[in-house]
Image (cartoon, rainbow, N blue to C red; front, side, top):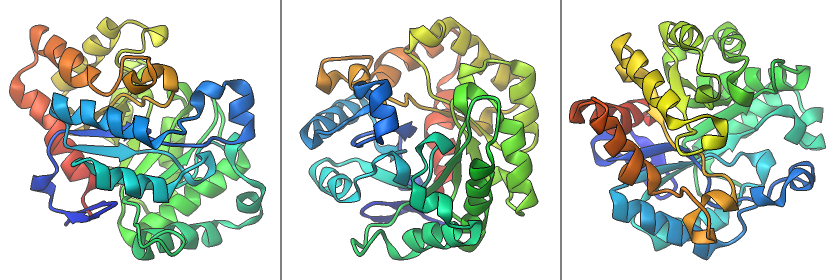
Length: 304
């Protein structure tokens, strides 16, 4: 079992403190840029600077979650990985349906699965750089037909490769329905993480997801526009009390310039390590629980 980083395989015990959903560099499609140019992260030097803040705070590994349809730049990520001593795992797959390009919409599920599996096993477009995670997603309170097709393709690519699956949920919705589709494709749900669930801090809902074996992806700490961090702290404590400590993955999803210290914004990559984790400890979590969430769980999830 290894984690597939952009620079090659790494043993789980080498991974260290890990953020499981972030963004370093991306050139989003026109539909996203019309909504807000803040989504574009175009500068490699800023990504390197932000990773240095992450490393200085104690970070060791980061999952770059930019999908094919969201302006992934694999060669730039390769250069960034060479510049900073941080493990980077990057992504194959697709985001929610509004970002799917025409060429992928025309492909059937098997062809899309072959594309994603080929990237995992052979590398992206002749670069030799191999992603270590597969992504799918859906829209707010609905799974569109083109999204279901991609989710089925994600499941089939996983079956070919064993690589872990990360699912985008819009504002934390449709997670159980995504799991239904993946389960129909024969996916072991222990290999699946659902992102952005803390946008929908419904404890009953989260327990239902965890009971099926999937990981709970929380990635909004510090984003107070989505509710106070006190809500996230309470949710984390409830999940731990329910016995699902091995299924929590917590990151920041700093996918905007205005979120990144290197671009003059915040809270930045150092926030979780320098502020949020100390708060969790102050509010009663133990060091062993912090280690479980940020070291042991990512190592187990990302290994294949």
